[in-house]
Image (cartoon, rainbow, N blue to C red; front, top):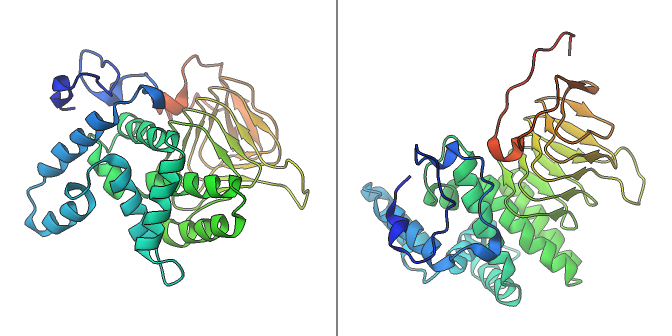
Length: 296
């Protein structure tokens, strides 16, 4: 990671280990209120200027260089991607900017999400890459707008946003679903999160994960995912079950019951394996599994 943040008065990245690589630390990343948004934006601009491909010059200018700050650029990116004949990109961008104006914490939370992606994703060594190119990050930020609209009693506009997120990013999150901060959806394709689902801080979700219901129950019917959980690719968590803090769900597992904190579960149906771990897999991104002595 570049040390160019050292010239800023309030660093936005937690102190790193001796290797100075954000992916080697188990720190979750800063809380949204701790982030210096001006320093974050200067860092993104610096990284974008390091791109030497002339074919991307106009792209970087449109998405980064012409914007005065982080929230303006993020609103423009989401508006461009999700705008259509129903709501034009410019109108949607304006809606998102107004949402950020009415709810400033959404901007800081987006910044916290972005830093979390850089720190956890082994394929990412900077901020500008997920900011411009990672649809998992984009889908979460678009959902946060839809959720705010849902809370403001604008359900059809929120549902329109949900529909566009699903069409463009292949990520389907009901606008009523509640997400904490420093949440990462990696790759994103095929992720489904139901209406009454709750995802706490520092959770990481890989592609093709479903947090779904088990029928037509109208009440609380979707999973509650606690802090620091890691959900592997293709896992299905169904019903009003609680995935305890720091738990890990193996790829392809079908979870139908509560999962205890700091426990690894795998299989169909999922069952605990190995001994309890001590770290937060959603932060460390430890995808390893203990020895398994049965056929999954």
